[in-house]
Image (cartoon, rainbow, N blue to C red):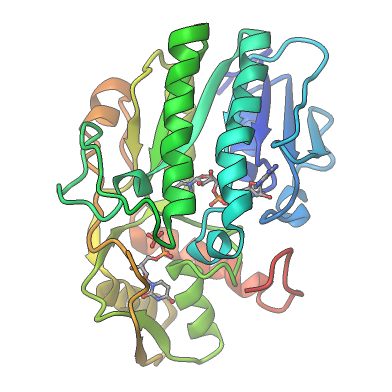
Length: 325
Ligand code: NAD
Ligand code: UDP
């Protein structure tokens, strides 16, 4: 439990869905101080509510595309900062490209200055609409560089490239996690991703909106499993990218059925046009994570959905957070 004992960690994007869970985990694992740096562009103060009273936690309001530094040692820099839902990055394409490029480099500079480990939150989106299935880390991807998703996909690809360059040129100890669709409490009900979309629709008694014919696949990982993978990777010496995700693949139609079962509702389905460049299939090959990190997901979809639904029920009544969709 004390794996981060005496360590000081900086979490870029610490007020977001994944960043806030990571801050909590680092503190639970004994970190001497955790500093979140976030401009709240897609994050939410309320994600940090459980941390406010913790004397080892600091929240700074700062845009990481502007330079930043700290007095004293830093042992880990986790870069979780970026709009992440297709609706968010469609509304914020330039901010997404800037945080993925300038923001990532500012984080790398901090790690270089302090001799810290730098962990980059990359994504399965770097595989684009994949022609290889399931996706292994040695697949180079199929990305449209000028399509509606390119601001995110290419920012993340550039992010991996500059991380690799800082490792080669400045010998920064770097880690790259390629995160596959992750869900859980603290996603925004209105962020447009399929998990909050379907749960929100069921809560409001609306139809599920399925884009396309629903035959496209995704593989959903519960947040605690993902955070456990990130922690293991940070503490390892693995410098090549590692997929972290749940290999249980399903169609979006099957996922709608799973939400309907979990909520006991009667929601029907309305079909809407498939967004351009929406990947047709996605499933992580997690052999590398299993072999090098001894990691694999533990939380079943049914259990993770139950936790997530109960969170969304509790927030359904509160006013809409930072961004409107
Ligand atoms: P999120 O939007 O909840 O969190 C991102 C955080 O970054 C927000 O708090 C936001 O305010 C902050 N941020 C954005 N630009 C910033 C800037 N310029 N300066 C400071 N802070 C900034 O998204 P999330 O789902 O928690 O994703 C976290 C990271 O994980 C992202 O890098 C995302 O690309 C990656 N990721 C997430 C998933 C997923 O399924 N959740 C999948 C793949 C990759
Ligand atoms: N999706 C859907 N209805 C929605 C939201 C999303 O059918 O209301 C589909 C979307 O087209 C995609 C899948 O669900 O095929 C996952 O979408 P999400 O935005 O969660 O993540 P990503 O596309 O980045 O994997």
